[in-house]
Image 1 (spheres, rainbow, N blue to C red):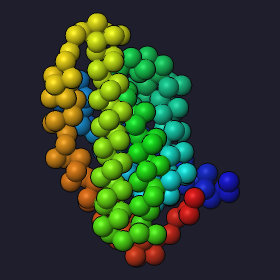
Image 2: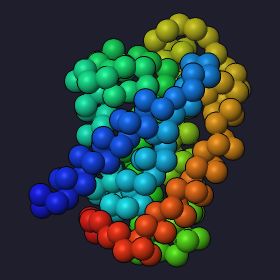
Image 3: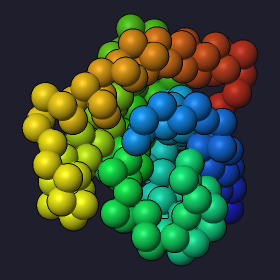
Length: 180
């Protein structure tokens, strides 16, 4: 991996961290700007480097840097919203297959929407596990869906579409990042 690629990975890990600090606390899962940054990492860097950016972000938080919406540290593993962070890695990888430098707008949007669904899936399953098993707060799948997913669907669908269009625009204007 080249120095340029390492810099791109670090840049997008930092952008995801900054996105976490832009938040609106709504229930146990805050609304943040992480999702567009994760999608942008995949769309601009491709699958490997995009996923690596999300992994670096997650590891930064787990070692104690306050990069998550709720802070940082190993204790974040028991946060009901940590599954969304775990989902960022495969989501960035999946979005990378719709990379702006290789795809039509429709393809980039499709992959960004699929990546968003992956984030929801990981977040939902982890949320149910933490609430029911770790925190011993019984919650049905329907109740968990209403709290952890439903309030975010429209926003994140719009974010996926707009982020895809933004990535395509950056590419058409000459911003060519890694082809990893």
